[in-house]
Amino acid sequence: MQTRRVPLRMCTGCGEMKTKKELVRVVRSKEGEISLDLTGKKAGRGAYVCPSPDCLKKARKARRIERSFQCRIPEEVYDAMEDALQKYAAGIPQAERKEDAKN
Image (cartoon, rainbow, N blue to C red; front, top):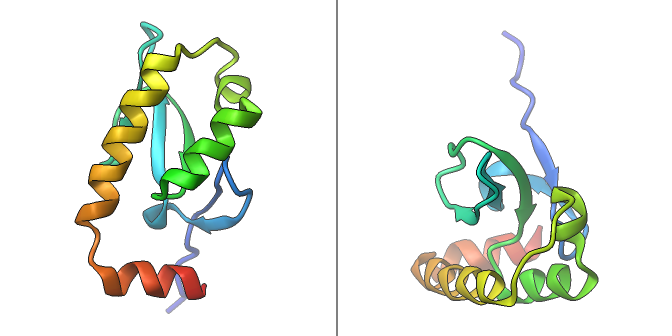
């Protein structure tokens, strides 16, 4: 049996290649609405960010998400994404975060 290839994606904040499961997807829908996709199944164009608020801040400062979506993102949307990401990161068990930091 062949081993399955694990899909890798690059974080727009830190630029590290990680598995899709380790990253959180930011989605731009057809209507132009931008939101976090914690399930990874929403329809639309996606960009990936590590589940740490620091990576989102780096991507925000360098406007990498705006560049990948080719549109301007209002500050309120970034603030809402940052709040949702902090709540999501708080729900991840501490052992998993330490393991991710080692890799």
